[in-house]
Image (cartoon, rainbow over all chains, first blue to last red; front, side, top):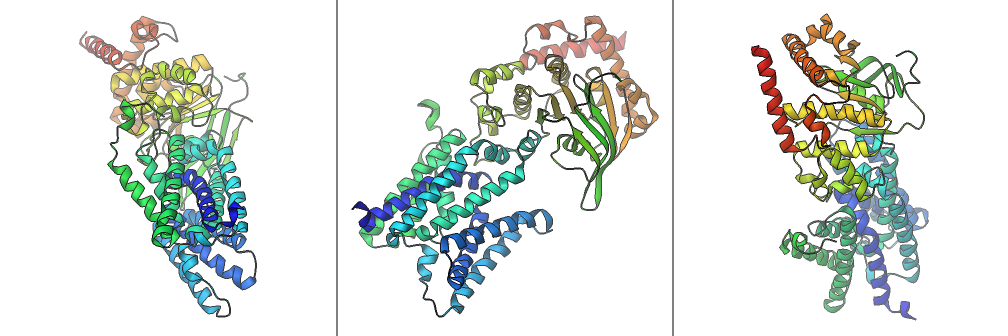
Length: 270
Length: 282
């Protein structure tokens, strides 16, 4: 069967991730949440440690921990007299350090720390693919269904609030979606590089897109190219898959900078 | 006034406290269909806060804010920034909280003389252009309650007069209630039914004429208030010449539904300014 080939599994999982992180990454970029995403990912490491300790499902534990961290930060941002930037720094590195400590203490479990930090796409199982596809369909479905209010709240909270969209509700929805993406993609690119897959494809698409929907599709295309390119490179030169994918995405971004900005003004608009 | 139907929104002793400080307190205010209520007051007097309370963007810390159930609202904020990362076109902004066809968008923009802006990126609009787009977006919602926070920002003197005429016209067409914030009483007098003068609390309220003559208002605004009254008289004379409640003082703008059109405004504005001068000299 096709899925028996490790490369096919890796490619399928990676492409599914790219389809999900593309549009969601646009929201991360639009709302300037990249540091926020890092913090979620670092909290995810703590989630892995806890899952191993309590022997529960890792994906679920990561989701819960990442979501808890996200909601805590949302709540604190409005109440604590510390800049959001500093607060995120405290949370982000605090979670990373605590997660690493917890893993170091648990001498009885053998953890592939490298795999956790940087991902190991070539080792995804059929079950992993199932989780990634189910999670991906759920996240993308919710994103499409609530696109309008999510977008309205992103563009202008005041207008959205005045005209019937409760911003806090959609903040929470976005956090849930982000936490879910972190949970399902931790295996693929690892804790340290998840945010890269949210930000880089979206940023690469920005200069070449007119309109928000075009940018969402553009970032999916950029993500798909990055995953395919990165995986092929990884196979050919035997490089770690996660960093290869992110490096490919960064290359795409740089290539995008070389395309003239007014590409659409003469040609056809998308 | 007394026998008009239920108010769209009613504030009773409403106030908002943030960080131990009252931004505004003790606001009593109600807006009915077809009524234009203007909030005036110095900087930091709580005008925007009051508008945000009325819309429910923020919840009041004391007192009550009651909106009619299912009230259809539209809001034109004071300012709006769009980040580079967001490729937001005028058409995306127009359809932000509503489903609109391109034809409907064009029609609403056309009313503001801004139809040509439709494919443009919002980031690249000038202050005045963005103001028109935001106004068109709000009007296209066919709101029952329209809230405008300093709608004349970035619009020059002559444009401002046309803008207030236009707002009155919107009220007449839609029959909606309008809550408007202005920095300048004399500019909005002709287009206002009720004025609420704020200074951290309601300092005085009533018809524009009453407020302009009240000692509280004169205390708050000093010499400017007296001058404003004089200018207001000029406006008053002028609109009488042209006559009709809906009609603009200069007939030329009204007939073309293009009051927002740049060149047009410039011309009529100059004419009007000369007319005012002539009046002064006489």
